[in-house]
Image 1 (cartoon, rainbow, N blue to C red):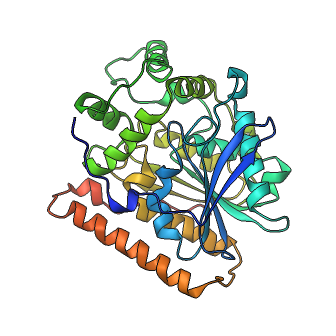
Image 2 (cartoon, one colour):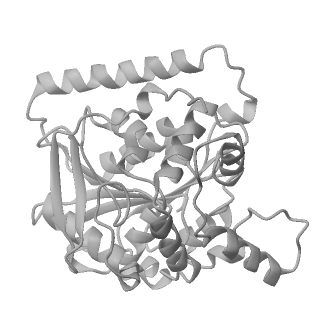
Amino acid sequence: MSRRPIPADCLQPVPAEELAVRSADGTRLHVEVHGQPGAPTVVLAHGWTCTTHFWAPVIHRLADRYRVVVYDQRGHGRSEIPSSRARYSTRALAEDLAAVLTRVVPEGERAVLAGHSMGGMTIMAGAARPEVAGRTAAALLISTGPSDLLTEVRIVPDAVRPPGLRRFLHRQVLRSRLPLGPVGPVSRAGLKYAIMGADAPAERTEVAVRMAHACRTGVRANWARVLDRLDVRPGLARLAVPTAVVVGAEDRLTPPVHAHRMVAALADPQGLLLLPGVGHMAPLERPAEVAAEIDRMATAHLPARPVADSAATAATADSAATADSAESAATAGTDLPAAATADPERTAVA
């Protein structure tokens, strides 16, 4: 089966530093540091079945002016697989985030945190921990939700009306231990329907599909059990820092209803960015808008610091520009429907 090309900005840049961080239960986490030493720090947490590679398009757009830290959630990518089912939990996610922040953010300094899907749930789960709260200046919750995921998920067609039946069918899909097998037309179509906007470019869908297929079956299923019974609303209520919310209008896994609920529950909401035509994978589908939102929060809530190496800054900026140019070239000649390029809608919160 032929493999589709990958956009240049979705290729993971070479990190400036790689770290192995031990969480509270001893699980080893793979951490990468990109961008500029001495610059303000942004920490990105990916979602279910993804890896640090998920953030590549955002890293390319931020690394010229920030120190960007990404890590593989436990069981994903190059992080260690938990030794037992008991080590899959929202508590473990919070402990992992605390361990990473303790390692990469010096005491007395703070970072902006951005979490996609399970990464957003990680931020909510860890919000009250001193290691997290004391090192967080602001946060972004992207394509995520705090609870009732199976009630709101929209994968099963609306024609199936009984709520109990819908929850049962969604549970069977999300908790399945069946291997996805090789990437092919059926899996591409199915995953695109579930996680991408209808007009998402094929090349970006390919990135998401490959990551989902690469995730180990047991890891996928064990985290699905956690998401099935997820409730991090207490953590959301204790997320005291300025927090913005981003969601795709066509997100089937964490629909916009979650975004509105989170904004209503936040102590210091900084607006809701709704991306028309976008599904669950907003940082892949619309990385420019997501990176701009991270930049907006970092500019407002992190102190500006001089970059250590101006030559490195210029080189990284050139790399990001090259990636943007390559992406444009990769999609040249493709007529995207208006929904795919529609302007985002921002809801300001007083």
